Every structure is written in C-alpha cells, then in structure tokens.
Image (cartoon, rainbow, N blue to C red; front, side, top):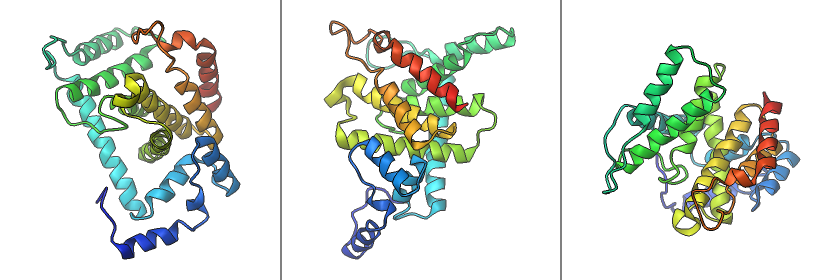
Length: 266
C-alpha cells in the first residue's frame, strides 16, 4: 500500500475524472457544509463520504485492511505502554504511570469495587500508555499528531471493551469518520502543536474521536458534527495563561449537552 506518492499524469487524469462524480464533489470547507452536501445526495453517514475519497486509489479491501493495520499498531502501543515502567527520557525524572494505574484498576476490579468513572479511568490509562510510548520513542500512529496520539486509540479501545456488540467494522467506520474531521481541521485551521499549541492538537484529536464515537454509536452525520463541536468547545482558552487549568470548568453547559447527546445515541 502506497501513501503520499506523486501521481504520474495518466493517473492524475483518472483521479481528476473521478472528482467529477456527484459524491466526490462534496468538498466544502466546513464540516456543516460537508454534512449538508452529503445529506443532499443521500449520504447519511460521514464515514461513507470519507470512504469514497479513500476509494479513489484503493479497493474497499485495501482501505479496510489498511485501517485495521493502523488500529493494530495503536493497540500494540497501548499494550506496551501498560506493561513498562521506569523513567521517561528528557532529564525531568518523570516516571511512567500507565502500568501502575492499570494495576490499580485491575485490583479494584478483582475486589468487585464499582465506580461510575471506571470506563473513563480505563480510557485515561490507554491514552497515557500511548503518550508514554511516544515519549520514549516507541511506535505510535500519528493521529492526528505524535503529541496527541493517545486520544483516538484510547477511545477506540474504550468502545471495544465497554460495548460488547462492537466489531472490526466499527473500527473502520470510526477511523474513516475521524479522518474526515481531522482533514477538515487541518485544511481550515491547523493541528500542529507548533502553530496552535498543545490545546489545539489535542483539541483536534478529541473532536475526531468524539465525532467518530458518535457515528459508531448510531449517530447521523448531523449528530457527528454536533459531537465534534461540543468537544471542541472543551478546549477553552486557559485562565490567566495557565494551560494546566481544565477548559471544561468554563464549559459546564457544553458538558451537559455532550452527556445528553451520547445518551440519545444509546
């Protein structure tokens, strides 16, 4: 499978011809425009639109296998991160936490201790595990960036483990939807930490994951857009320049809306 290859003129003409097809013409700048255009031509799910763009140069089987391969790498990053300990490189003496956090959650599970935050606690461990792998130079999937590479794997793993009916088709749908959202963020603004800071790149990753989760839970394209927008609101401007202040403290109404949205999709 080839990515980022420069097309020769005959191949480029074939791709150009395919862009004249009705579905491929939905190339608006904003996600709301993409959603409206998709609905207008009968496409109810953002992943279908994303699949059409991926299918220009690759067969459906190639698209599916490529996405599942990337999920396998993501999942491996989670597993490695949860089974290693020690100090992260860089001279700050920051210790790896994922293994200890996992052990604590497993101990609570063994004692049959119930917590309303259990699923979110596990998702946090998965994200931390990937981030620590990135910090040590381990293999991760840049989705959307290395610095924000923990979000999407964590949400997929959470969905796979806490929704027993989930399957590999859902992973493909999730990644297609996330890619469509991430591509629009990159085109319209930026996903680079060097340009928009850590809040910007992690905010993009959270929007990608939220929209994709809404889609695999049965959301329409409009609901996917709403989920993306609600989570994007969480990346509030830091108070008094303090990046460590949680953006959600400024967005309690949005948090309530997000909870209602997810409840409506179940």
